[in-house]
Length: 234
Image 1 (spheres, rainbow, N blue to C red):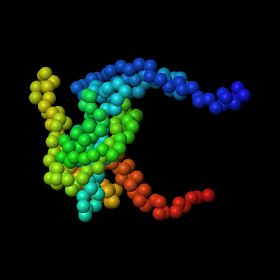
Image 2 (cartoon, rainbow, N blue to C red; image 1 turned 120 degrees about the vertical axis):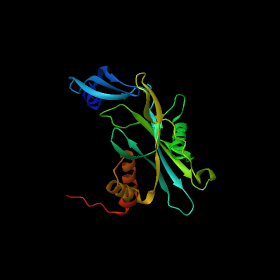
Image 3 (cartoon, rainbow, N blue to C red; image 1 turned 30 degrees about the vertical axis):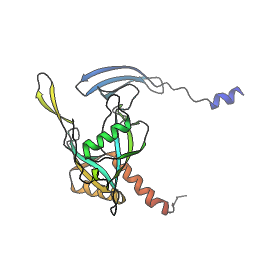
Image 4 (cartoon, rainbow, N blue to C red; image 1 turned 180 degrees about the horizontal axis):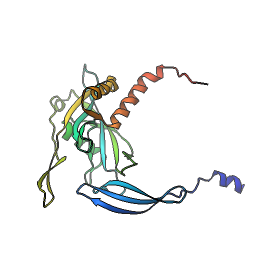
């Protein structure tokens, strides 16, 4: 009986964080050296990048999966295109941003959507906090699903309300910055999302955010794969 019980017991995890030392810290991000133990109990070191604005126990931000619905039009996914200095090129992304103090993920998503695209919508769902690049950073985000009524007068001619984004030096000695954001709104029909993304990558100097591409793959599989019989190799 005791032997059976021990077999059913989950293995004891030995991985744990031992210490973290900040190597370089800037205004928004810091490079840290994290010492941890692996599954064999051996001490190892990992270099990690973290936000200086990170709040304990809370997601950093939101990414908005916003679908624009209009009479006699195909449903469109609302995306944003902007130059990303770390990538050195333009990226096609979901509208996204950090969650302000005292703000819910729903409110943050609707605010970011209006700021970056000008569209007003209604939240239909929120994911749990998910990681973005766990091999590099501890940044997390909520995926927020939003429906946008394109027939509503407020969404006929949407106007962006761009706020802070990129950093423009004002006084380098004092490390003072004026923050700017430049964002282009891109609408892509949901029923040909994957095709249009592939075309943009071929024709333009643009990289597609992994969340956007995975979403497109999921839509494609959901539409096509149920009608296809699987062929399995023996």
